Length: 230
Image (cartoon, rainbow, N blue to C red; front, side, top):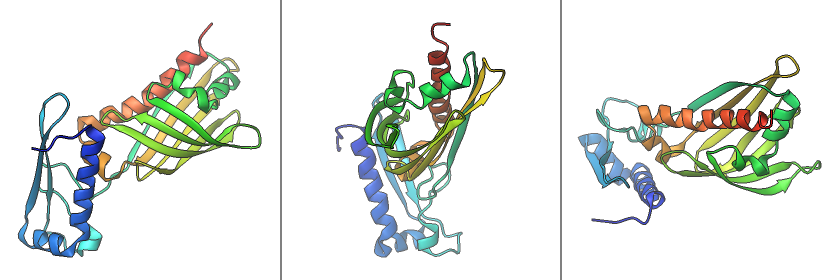
């Protein structure tokens, strides 16, 4: 039985395995013809037995290059990517300008945004704001690394887009709406294709938990930070 140093190493091995199977006609072809299944059994850090299946499907008339390999019944889907889209809105007892100042201070965001563990500014714009940033985020099932490029629209919000990283692609934004000069409606939104490995792990209740985890903690973290000292 193989032992992995950490979950990241396990996911890299699984990802490489599935990539090679999908890309090799000599391996993938027989699977499609024979409805073969590959089972990958392992135990997570809590010692819970888990199983990942990669199976073929003869029902789809699409060629292999178009359909990829898809799992059989009751298995986690592998090879068909899904988009994760989530947002969380809070009302903050603080002016929009204060909320924007905090949200736009990317370098210090880990102090109040619990899912954002590390930030390294790689490039700044002409105003000294973080333009390109390397981040490490807690995505519940694993740590996710991304290189993000930011755009600013003060005081209404800001947005970012991944240039490279663990997800296949990712975009996000803060939208700040002034309510009465003293309060702000803040919405934190994310949309991403988690990629083969994360997509394989984000199923059912876990996916919903991750969506809430990454958006709610950011929105409520901004609320708590902006309302400090009131």
